[in-house]
Amino acid sequence: MLFHERLYQLHIILGDKNQPALWEAKGWQFIRANLSKVTKAARGPASLNSLQYIPALGNKYLDGKFGKLGLSEKAEKKWLHDYVNFPERKDWLFHSVELWAPGRTTCGNQNLAPDVYLGIANEGYYSNPAAVIFNPYLVLAGAVDMGEEYLSDVNNLATVICQHTKAILHIHKTIPWGKSNLSSGFTDAIGDLLADVTHGVDRVDGTWLSGPRYRVGL
Image 1 (cartoon, helix red, strand yellow):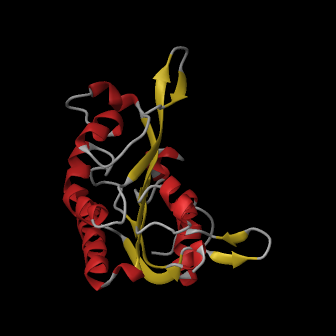
Image 2: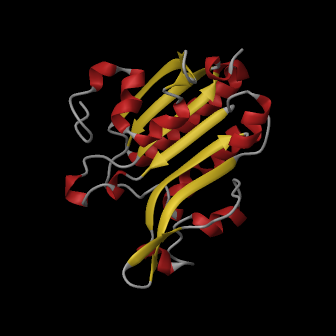
Image 3: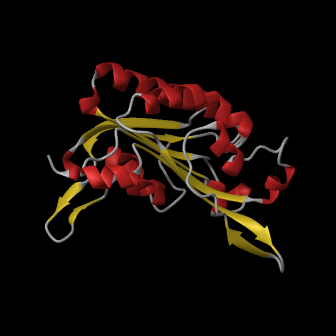
């Protein structure tokens, strides 16, 4: 089996922008237990990558440097927006966080796509709050060959996320990690869907599209 041929149960979720953000401590706590259960059952430990911008002198922002991150309380102290213990993080600009289990490097070395993938994007990063109609945009995928019990846990995680974010859209479909491409091996990887919500929704159900970014048919 080639890397991109592995099948996944893919979930695309658009949350209600008025609910607590998942990258904030009060939001993350609602999904932590279910997420931990799924990642602990994977063939290797989870690896996280978060893109954020931190205020610097001269009204500038610098890329946040968090080092190697796993799924742990120690790692959360580096990137999570915990305003109680780290009030200065209210000024941080959160863009996205991605989780692979096992990590991206391990998957590459094994030539096997992850057992589970989670991506969370802050739609508010791209525009002023008044222009955003949903937040966050979330991609969740669990490998089908992990078995029914594992997929049940992934689906339970999706349900918890939908409940917490009061999702205005939740669609899902079984698809391969990527699409075969003669020149580059494969394209349209699940791990690339977080870059554009219209692309993510289209891989599940193109009939939901109704135009450019922020104009998703709901």
